[in-house]
Image (cartoon, rainbow, N blue to C red; front, side, top):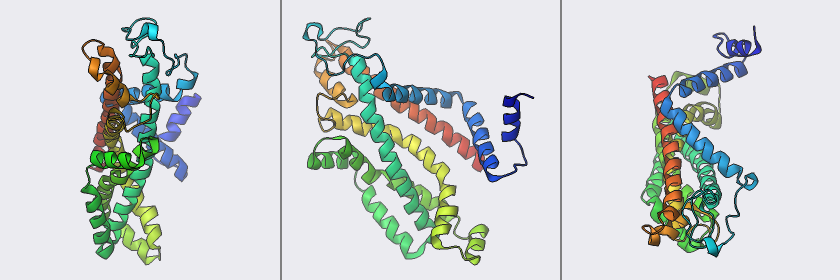
Length: 301
C-alpha cells in the first residue's frame, strides 16, 4: 500500500485512535466536500491568486510602482505595460499588484479583530442570558445603528488617512453581525444536556463559554467572515477613492480608480483595471462564502 493510500485510509477511518486523528479526518472530509463545489473552487482560486500575487509582490519581476515615465504617460495596454500606464507614466499592472497588499491586509486584520470579538460577545450573551444578555445586545444595537461606511469616513476624517484608520473604522462596527449570529446559536445551547452536565461537574463560566459554546459557533463565524470580506474591500476602496486611504503616491485600488475617473472615456484602462480587481476579489470571497454556507448548512441538517 502506498503512502498516499495509507494516509487517506488513516484520515477516513471511522474509528480514530486519538483526538488529532479525528480532527484531521474531519478537516480532510470537509475539504473534499468543498473541492466538489465548482463555484467554491473558482472562488478559492481567485482569492488564492490575488493573495499570492500580493504576498510575493516584492520578489516578482514587476516595474517600480512609483517610478514615473512622462514619455509613456497614458499608454494603452501593451506588451510593455500589460494594464497600460497612468497620467504619470506609472505601470498600472505593477501598481495594481502592489495595491492589493493594503486592501487584503485590512481585510485580514479587520476580520481577525471583529470576528472573534463578536463571536465571544454573542456566545456569552446567548449562553448566560439574563442581564448580561440584555446589556451586551443593547451595546450591539448601538453599534449597529452606525452605517459602516459613514463611520469609516468620520473616523478617517478625524484621525487622518492611513492603513490603521481603515482597520479601526471597519472593526468598530464589523463585530456586530457575528455577535448576533453567535448569540442566536448559543441561546439554543443554554439548556442543552452537555452544558447542564458540565455545570454539574463544576465547570466555570469561562470554560463553558470557551470550550463548549464558542467552538460550536465557529462554523457560522467562518461563513460570515467570508461573506463579510467583499464589504470590507468596498469600504477600503471607498476610502481610497475619496482620498482617505493610503497617502499618495502609494498604490491603492480605490485611489487608482479615482485617478482615472476623469479620463474614463479617453483612457479607460486607468480606472477599469483596478476596478476589475476589486470585482474579482469580492467575487472570489463571495463564492467561497456561498460554498461554505451550503456545506455547513447541509452538515447541520
